[in-house]
Figure 1 (tube, rainbow, N blue to C red):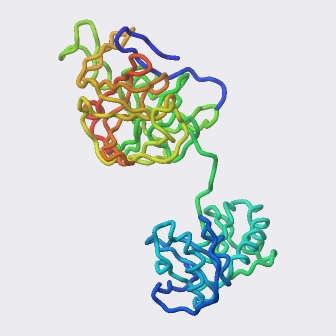
Figure 2: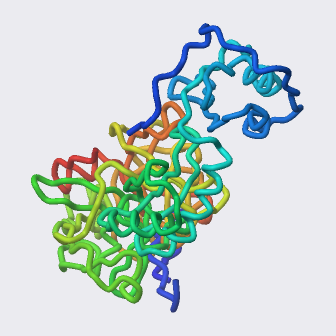
Figure 3: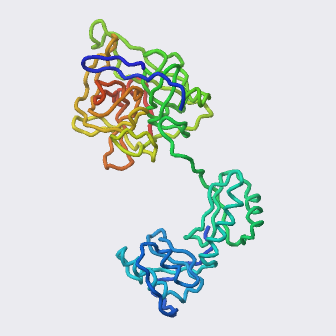
Length: 412
């Protein structure tokens, strides 16, 4: 592992690579429309609205519409009163009256849809590009989801051979499902927080940025072939051995200089940052950072995205977050700002850096550091992590310093 130690603050570099890793239904019937009484219905004490609604003849599905209104499909909308009675236990548990229920005309009953779902599954899911088959409660149809570019004609033909009515099916393009990715997996589009590989070592991609018209990403200068100075370092994601197509090449990495406030005998910069330009065939997303399944728990499993909506300057006492390929999402208190720090084992000094008390490990170098002002997914970019003073203390270069050295960047 390329890692140096220091009594105060040690530099965290990349860890050495190990061998691997359209709706067909009618408009809703308003709740106030009078309906015929279908006779007594026995309400089940259940939290399953479908099980309850099965008591109603001609039931074709139950769901909440986009406005949050409980909605039921019935082949005969005049049987509304019976539907209200059947669903009363469920609605009451949700704090709703039966009058809140709205009714849509069903073309097919639920038992038929479930039977057709089973038949369609055996045919459709054996085809290349098929994603899922669903008895869709909100559509009163069997929905077949397929990947973009899949032959719809082929899917229709396969379903027709099962005897499922074409009028009962809907085929739509959807995104494919896969096992949950981690920060160390191949992820496209590429975004902040993911593992990157440069010759012999691993680091973390900080954030995507545009410099003029160039699509780029920012990581540490020490996550290049040589810290300071451009050597056109190649990058892969997650590993050259598993994804051999190069994703980017280093294009901007200022050298370390002496004088102008730099301590005698040392070489200085205000950021440990370099910029790499994306290859034309690599998909990337501006302003996104991978979000893992938990904070301060070491999880590397991606569960969503943080969205950069602003940049900010660090303030002592703020809670800073980072996402890195080794320790995942961690957060802690900013304890120091604009600190001049010697990099252990070198003659390098990083000027005006910030320090955070939070989990960090080898390979987290380059991690994006950010604030969550509202506790949601919109975040304010602060900079990138570059060094550690143990497992619970890290230093980062502020975004203002990065842009002072690499030029103005569009980060969201």
